[in-house]
Image (tube, rainbow, N blue to C red; front, top):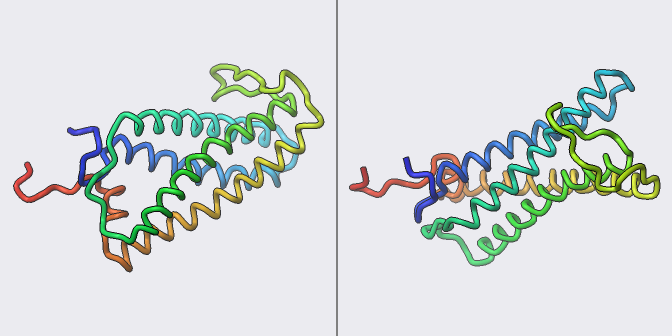
Length: 189
């Protein structure tokens, strides 16, 4: 099985990174929204620990995804679309990557400023970014984390909306290439 992307579409590794990160982001958003309304109980501490671990996992996966993407080509047979749409899509993807990196980093910063333990799925300790309690940075980090979350939600709505618009209105292969991978040309086996 070909792991790399081809001129006709994204390969299985890129697609796996895309959909795994997408599922984790949706789960992470739901967990984050639920946990802030929980009372201070041991269950809340477990949910916070899960939220932190998933955030670190997303950070690691997006770094791996970027490393993978830097080693392979982009599909060279894109669906026909106006130049402005291509530029907007590229800007959107860059913004999404930046947000998906910044969001867990801001959570890590907030956690560090609160001097809370950060243990990835109970397996190993993650070092503090502030080397202890930082009362001046804690509210700033939380505000940044929340703002980045809502900005990510807004961009994801636009991203998903654009993919669905391409699929149902334009009837092109933009969504299919991320769902199904490279198109087979007639005569390919």
